[in-house]
Image 1: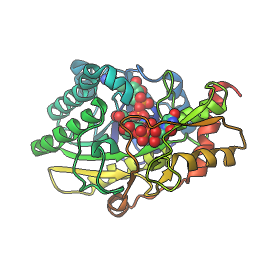
Image 2: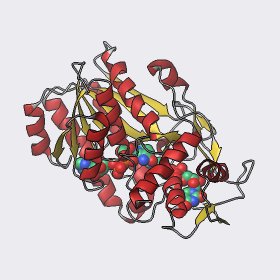
Image 3: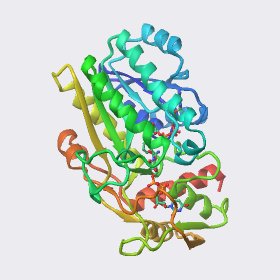
Length: 342
Ligand code: NAD
Ligand code: WQD
């Protein structure tokens, strides 16, 4: 791919699920990128996948974002125009068992990154936030004005803390966009990159695809007595490549701004609520595979129904989704088959 912009974007956690898809879109948009990842939660083959899709060599540095001196050195050798910070731990369950590691990695890496950025006067930052910051929101279709409620987990707490830190950091001449992802699913249509879940997945779609592939015996639908049309929870499932393109738009959004200090949060979702049972049935319909599932009790901490009001991001970024639920599930399944060599 040809590089036709003057942007040089540092992507932390760029070998991860959302980071890798974003790197693909950044390269497609003509941006120069540098990828940093500790590879603690990903593998080098994902970087090779990015290189195959984009037909270009990726500049990769195996660095832990808690390591100030390595990041400092990298910033000294490059003139980054912006940073996208994906690097973090993301498992709700793991954060309950090991909260200290979550605070250290998620909050600690952000603080180190901000210090290095400040030292090198790199001011534009896109941050990976989550709909989890809303806790149990009062509105089903939530917009960015909804207050942060009590976080459901230490993981959720780290995202709330990071947003607070960023809001305050902006007063020190940072320009920050925080993207609150809803439920990213699917994989790149090429099936060269996708999610690499560690252990037994907590998230619905990896559990569905692993069950369909015979890795798990059956899926349990957690709760069928919610106040929803079919009794199961409602979420906003969004294709990971749509999540990725929003980051390219976010870079462009900040570039067009003349203000020296910005902190803006945006919901990143489709605006469509889909129930767990609807998703399961859609998966069976679009893939044609059989899926063993059972109806089980509620999972503690689950929000009954929540989906994004994406009006702000649609208007300010001119960003809209390209993929629907069927395509997202098909791509998730194609990626699972690739992983299993089926
Ligand atoms: P992921 O685990 O696939 O990717 C994270 C990447 O960051 C991994 O490659 C990991 O090796 C790397 N990493 C972790 N800590 C690091 C550190 N200290 N230094 C360097 N690299 C480090 O996760 P993902 O799904 O791609 O999530 C990316 C971001 O989006 C995270 O901040 C996550 O909290 C956030 N998010 C994810 C979801 C989701 O459902 N996937 C939803 C909302 C928000
Ligand atoms: C979706 C629905 C489950 C598994 C989490 C984080 C959130 C964000 C996205 C990072 C729920 C049901 C699930 C299963 C099921 N991540 N389910 N059987 O909980 O909406 O959000 O991931 O920021 O912070 O909390 O996503 O995929 O875990 O669950 O019935 O085996 O699927 O109960 O209703 P969730 P999820």
